[in-house]
Length: 287
Image (cartoon, rainbow, N blue to C red; front, top):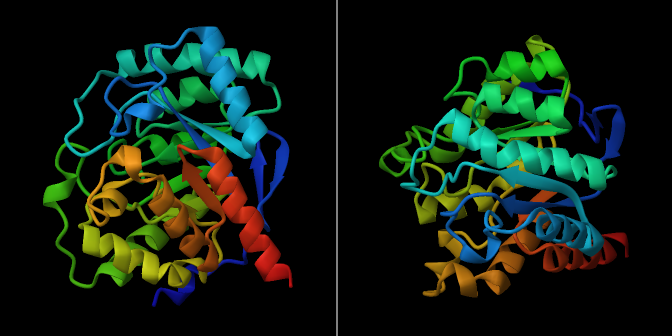
């Protein structure tokens, strides 16, 4: 399957001149700058600049390597906002964190190349694109131009339509093929650091999400760092008949399974539990 897309295992990222080691798993903490993200506890949009700094600093203290800033909600059925509104929400926070937390590695969660470019120029180190380049034809060229790492996530449709696009001929091979073909194109365009994200919850049913997790090690075999975003998602709380607010324990369980299958970045709302899961997993692996 797509053997011509194989590359040597990539265990470092060049984040604006900072060499980041990924031979062991790391945590990416979520800072939502939206009023309508699916988990209310993660919403930071009404906080003052000082409160946002405190939230970010606390995530770093608890063990986050990356901070992922998102100003456009991509939950199923989320409201669409303009490029200008996304930039207005995002840029002041990127600038503030870059100034006051200069050692923080800032990821920007956007599918728009214009937003990505402004964020990079303001100090962002990495672009996390939920659309995998499908919603903005200039995104690949933008990350190639600025030579930043790129999280290539699998999704079909838009946040407003994705849950009507869950039909696959063969789920895992289809998702892998779509990701790997794009990864090959990114390399050809000069993007050195590509991170793969299978896109849990994006154009997948709950059963499909679990099937992807069960076979995550197949994606890891292709040599790219793999990011998983399982935190408090519906595959957790609906399976457990709870809510996003009650889904922390289930999230930790699934994150631990993802670690066992080779995930290198855990994208989470709750940094300390994820960091502890990594610590315990590492202890087990080193015995």
